[in-house]
Amino acid sequence: MKRFFYSFFLFLCISAPMAAQDSPTTLFGSLDNVRITGFGGPIVGFGVLDGTATVFSGGGGAVMFNNFFFGGYGSNMVVPSVNRSINGIDYRLRTQHGGLWTGYDIQAHRLIHFTTSVKFGWGRLRFYTPGASFFNDGHSALDERFVMITPEVGVEVNITRFMKVAFTGGYNTAFYNAISADDGSPINLNGQYGTITFKFGWFGKRGPLRELQDIIRN
Image (tube, rainbow, N blue to C red; front, side, top):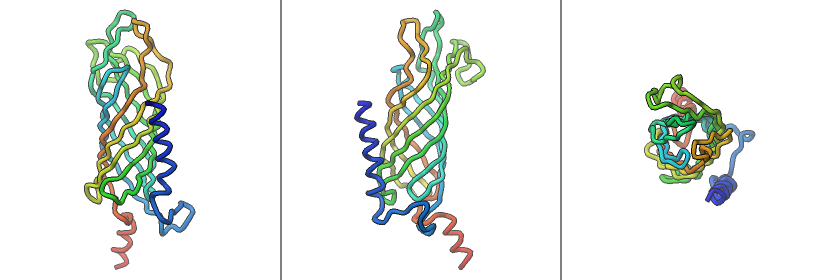
């Protein structure tokens, strides 16, 4: 399944620019064809941590160049649903990470269209004893750093000119020094991941700066 997802994601990334416009533009072409906008908003995630389902909350924002975007994101596990025993102590597990976020919206002018993106982040896997505050980083008894790469593919709905909602699915691939539980199995940060992303910005045919220039000229 993991191999199929990465192959499908690569196919969309290659075919997207060909299907997006009849006359593609570049950053080094005429600036009249480059629309610079941006967006930001909350992100709700659903995934797995060591094979157990859990929920994540965060947000992100980016600058858009036509249908490409580049920015950043943050994600924080908000449901203490994962418990593992290490050295005889029953810990609650929590991940938090953030980093770079880049992607492409395919035929973004359509009401419902495809969107693809890649998140490249870094963060910590934290371990909390039963009496410690789950949302206080300073109360974690142990922690382990990791790097996370998450390619995503999904559909996006244009609600208004200043709001979109994206429904995406992907796969978390983590790089870290695995910590083993008492049963001998390493704690696994890899797994399926889905998000609902609310984007607030300007998504009209012309960027807000062009709109402002026209108002000043007139």
